[in-house]
Amino acid sequence: MNAFFLLLISFAIGLIPASAREPERARNTGIPPTEAKVLVGYQGWFRCPGDGSPKNAWSHWSNGAPSSQTISVDLYPDVSELSGPSLCALPGMTIRGKQAYVFSSYVRDTVEKHFEWMQHYGIDGVLLQRFTNSIPSSQREGDVVLKNIMASAHDHHRIFAIEYDISGCDPATIFERLKSDWGYLSLTLDVTSSHEYFRINGKPVVSIWGLGLTGHHIRDPDLALQIIHWFKDTAQVVVMGGTPAGWGTLSQDSVSDKRWVEVYAQMDIVQPWTVGRYSTLAQVDAWKQTHLIPDLALARRNHQMYMPVIFSGFSWHNLNRDKPENQIPRLGGEFFWKQAYNARTAGATILKIAMFDEVNESTAILKAASEREDAPQQGYWLTLDADGEHLPRDWYLQLAGKISQMFHKSLKPTAEVPIKR
Image (cartoon, rainbow, N blue to C red; front, side, top):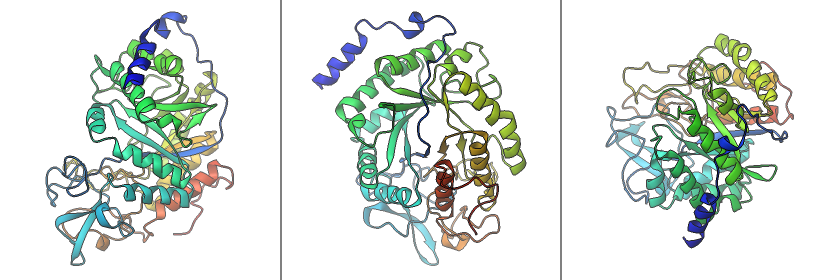
């Protein structure tokens, strides 16, 4: 703790906000290109009684005790390769007359299995979601999931980086919370000492998701610049900004204040959020023309890297019962592949897949139930046959592996899904 305290003092002494040192409209000095990377977002927030977590309670699987009325996930994960405390029995739910299970992210074996899959299918690593409003509880439970990810990344030769999600943050305290937590992660947990931590030109990468988005995010451009410059100038990291899809034109989901042009320009890597912004193959193709190509051109002018976000599909009926089932169909993987192909052929060299384990909104690419009969009989569940096709449980991991090959240039880009169903 003494070292942590000294670091915080060193950050504060003589620190002048970067926005005051640089002329208005100063541009990003830029970072050189890096080798291709395909990363997945990783939530790691699933808990259940008996998994060893401090609260010993259900978390993110349901609202209260699981039942067909309270379950809050749509996509049913395949847990056939898990055992012991990794498995969480769903009360009163059965598959073909046998007990149905989900998984706990708190257990080391679960995370190890997920990273084993990433290694097998060639996914480079994860952006671990760190929700700023949950930082105190994460620290109280010893940041077990983060420690498991560090160990699993080492065991399976994958990379990882912290992605702060500032949704619902208090603008009055978010800057101090981010500074304090990054000091804790750097000094107490030694995350950046890990050989597996994602670096560019020797500097660790930190993602801050939610800058400039309308709603409960950071909308004040001065506060955003203060945060970005602290991380870049004092913490000496490469800043990835999770931005609105409309960042390039200050439209759609972006704050319209023109000062945000400068904020976006100061990010080292721009990662626009696209989940739910389109829902058909025609819209995916239109997005390439209206967003991907102009966004990449703007990022090049700003000397930035550009990381498109793609997703497999979307459904959150159980989380929001007034929403339709299978809201954005996966189309047997065509929807997923088309986004990746368009991003690569537009010129992107790095990519984020949202997400690995997000079964609440059904964007997850982990192994999932192939047929409706492979999921609990009770309640609504999304399975891989929802669009009338029989697909193996690892289908989206297979596709993610081919996407990685396409970005690593070991597979020539092709408009058609390159593997047979």
